[in-house]
Length: 171
Ligand SMILES: [Cu+2]
Image (cartoon, rainbow, N blue to C red; front, side, top):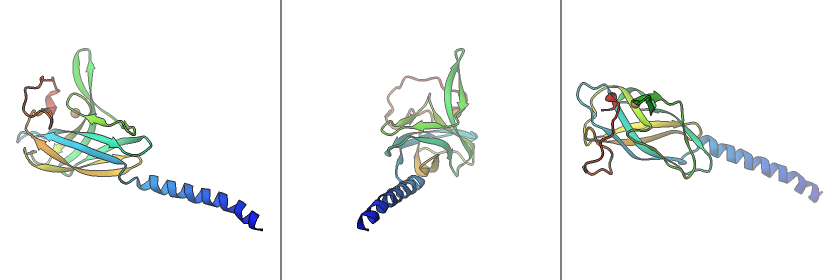
């Protein structure tokens, strides 16, 4: 009799473990992390801005960044920059894979978040709220530091950085 109970207990424990793992995946809290989020200040009339950041996957499985949003913009799109016959242009990106231990850097000249339909200008020195949505981890909220117009990021410290050609609407 005891033996039988032992035999029954194993599948039950396995099932409990699977349920626990699924529950962990569903919430996914804390596995995706956003750091160094920044945006460029925009001129008064500009309706478009760009935000840059680094995404870390602290989990064990690949996740996909599928969308972005901010209460300050009517719409936010994931964009990549592509060269086509010598001309730089931007393309909407459906999703960005974020693998464990391989931070994804969104930066000028590469993948970025395009803020469209700005409700007001982004002012240097302020921080604005933003959200990213991931397939597994769900929504991650964070603050974006607004740096001066044309900045190349928090690390540039005002040094003369090599001026990259960027499409006109990224400023
Ligand atoms: Cu863009």
